[in-house]
Image 1: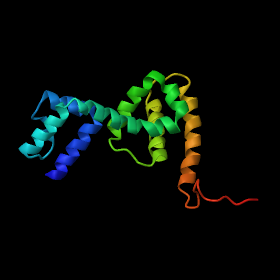
Image 2: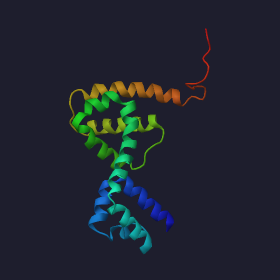
Image 3: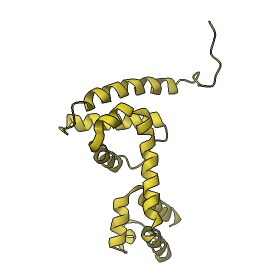
Image 4: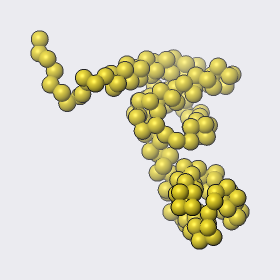
Length: 157
């Protein structure tokens, strides 16, 4: 059951909504995870601790960091729509890809699908998305070559 406890804890950190559900209904976690009574009590104490909000915030900041670094035009163009897009993206992609370029490209593809499905954004979003995807595609390609390293000596010529 330790694995279930660990999964529940990870899920709670990643989802403020899950924390809210657990706070509202102390038996909620027992219905979702195979936990002992002691594990459920410990998780409930964690969820109710004031520091849990900070924990969730740090998790979300860490998921936002690669997007902010690699998609500056798109992040700026989304403006007030960014938070809603992130919430929707993180619901679909509960686990992050630790390769920053892959995670960023996955977000771009998500935004493309949202646009294709009819979600409305400001006029600057599509050109920003296109520009950032092109730049990111180049970086992604270079990151997958074995010979590339930013620290390797370059041939002089």
